[in-house]
Length: 502
Ligand code: G6P
Image (cartoon, rainbow, N blue to C red):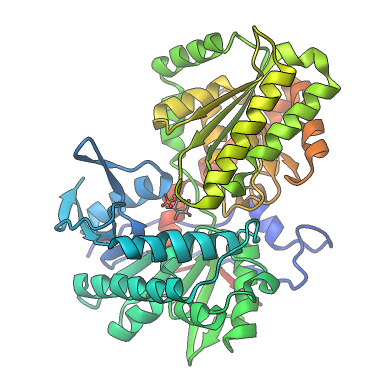
C-alpha cells in the first residue's frame, strides 16, 4: 500500500480556529459551546479508498464521458488514481444501466436508479425533505412516508454496491445528504470497513431538526460512521446536540459514544483547487475574455456579479431587490453600474425551483424596466452553465462579487472568486450564513434577509478605497491558498483528525 500523505500536517485556518473558540455572545457563539481539539500529527492513508456519492464524478456530454466540474472531483480523482480507488454513484439519468468503466484511471461503478427512485429518493426525500429542512426550512419541507421508504431502499442499494466492491479492508468515504443512512447499512454488511462521511450542506439546529418524522432513524444511519464530518463547527455542534437528544448518544472528549463505539465528529471546511483558479486567471486568453465581457456590458464603472446554482437558498431575489434599493438611493449610479447574474439550471422540475426561477426573472424584468432605459439595462441575467474558464473570466471582470445565501454549507463560489483575483483586487460581499464566512472574515459580511442592509453594503463596496480592497483580498487569498481542496481531502482521509467535542 502507498502512503499518500507523508509529511502533511493538517490544521484549521486561524480565523476558523478563532470562530470555533468564540466566547463572546452573539452570532458566532452557539448557546452550547464545543471545542475543536487540534491534533497536528502526520496523516496517513494506507487503505484503498471507495467514494460513494449520489452522482458519479463524470457526466455525459454529446455521448462522451467528461469529468464534472468542482473541487471535490478534482481533489479526489488524483488520490483515487494513485490508490487504485473506486467511485460509486448515479449517472444522472433514470433507468440507465451502465457497466462499471474506467475514466481518467479511476474505476467508476454506476448505480441504476429507476424513474420512481429518482422521483422519490432524489427529487423527493433528498431535495424536497432534507434539502429545505437542513437549509433552515427556507421552503416548507415535505414529509412523505413513501419517499422515506424509497430513500431507505436506495441507501441500502448504495451500501450493497459498496460492500460488493470492497474486500472488507477499505476506507469508504460517503458524501452528502443523499446518503445519510449508508453508514449504518454498510456496517451491518461489512463491519470491518473504515467508514467516513462528509455532509456538504448545513446540519440544522436541533429545534429544526426535531421536525423530521424520521429524526432518530436518520441519526442512527449517520452515527455508524467512524468519522462524521461537517463543514463547520456549528454544523458539527448541531449534530452532537441532535444525536444526544434523539439517538441516546453520549458526548465525550473523544467523540460521540453510541452503541458501545466512539465516533469522531469533525469540522472540516471544504475548499477549491486554488492553484487551478490562479492558473486560469493568469492566462492571456482569460484577459481577452475579461475585456470582451466588460465591453459587451458597455464598459460600466462597476460590475456586480452573482453566480449560483439556481436555488432558492441562494438569495438571488434579495440581492436584486437590494441592488434596486441602492439605485433608488443613488440614481446617479444607474448608468454607471451593472449587475450580472449567472444562474446555473438546477433541479428544474421541482416546484420550489420553478417558482424561484420565475420570481427572479420577474424581479429582474421589473428592475430593468423601472431603473433602465432604452440604452441601459441594469441587470444582465444569464440562465446557463458556464465552463470553469468562462466563469473565471467573469470573476476577473467583476468589481464586486455578491454572495447572499440564506443558508449554505460552504459556498465555493466565494472561494473561487477570491482565488481568481490574482491582482489582489475586487470586493467580496458574503452572507454570514455561508460556511465560507467562518474563514473569509475580510469579506464584507451581510445578513441576507436585510434588503436595506445589503443595499448599503453594495454602496460601501463601490466606495471602498483601493488600499483597503487590496488589504482584504490579500488576507483572503492567503487563506484559500493555504487551505485548498487538496489539503482538505488529505486531512479528511488521514488518521489524525480535529475532533469536535462537547
Ligand atoms: C449541492 C449538493 C451536492 C449536489 C449539488 C448539485 O452542492 O451539496 O450534493 O451534487 O448541489 O445538485 P444536484 O441535485 O444536481 O446533484
